[in-house]
Length: 391
Picture 1 (tube, rainbow, N blue to C red):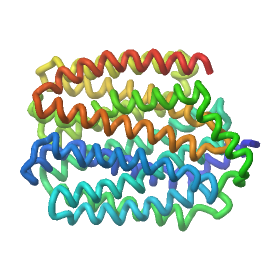
Picture 2: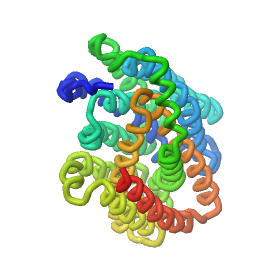
Picture 3: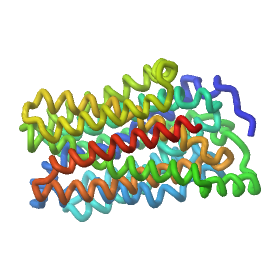
């Protein structure tokens, strides 16, 4: 499949509209992290029970996300992204008016169902547009938008929990998602909705590559990352609130520092890759995440908790960006489907990781869980490095 010129991707219009969508999607994913304690108090349940708004969202995101790849490959990735933003925005409005936890859980399931299309298909569109040797650098630029969305989601979730209402957070999300969907629908030229024409035989031949040994290994590592890293990250704000005594607003602010690590990675990815290569980034990322989680587990001083969160953030994007790049090459003529599989593994892993961490939290074992996760992340970094080196 011929690769279109990179200049197509770099137009300010494309970056703006796609970036806005991924920003809103990631904010949707992380909005509840810093409000779990407030939700538990509001609905009269444990923090572990309130964490269902994260875990069930992740399950819906992972399972239903598998369906979007074929649609994106067939009718145009950006068309699907626009529709998904509009639908997700509608259910964000539904979440804002939920009368009880059950209603909120169902609204979050619906939000996860539609949010699942946005980031994977945006990444797939980039994969169709940029050659492999430039792809990790370009995906890193998109990462700056998704990281900004993560930072906003966690930060504003904390602000809303302390000073407004968690309902205000969902109303804000609804506005952002509806605006993103309309912007893509209105301003993306029709000839950019799909990057290449769908062709049945090459498409299904490419899907067979998803069952090759190396591809299955990448998908397994994505699942492993979800269980370990993503599961732990969802509970960093709760750890900062309950163990270090920070307010929800302060915990959300600390997660801004976590996200700044991602911004630093996205801005410096080109230089890091030249200096130590993709395999070196994966190793370094595993070490930094492990150090951050260990600090959150054993330290008592808030300053150490804040520093540990920042260090973990830098490491996370070094590993995750590497896996994204590897996943973008799994099935070049069915890239939307392949990246949907990748996203499915990450979010199913996160849902399992969140469930495990929730049990640990309710039983006073979250510190022990962070220590065990730190050791597993060192293994993850080494495994991802091995895959990158073999590429």
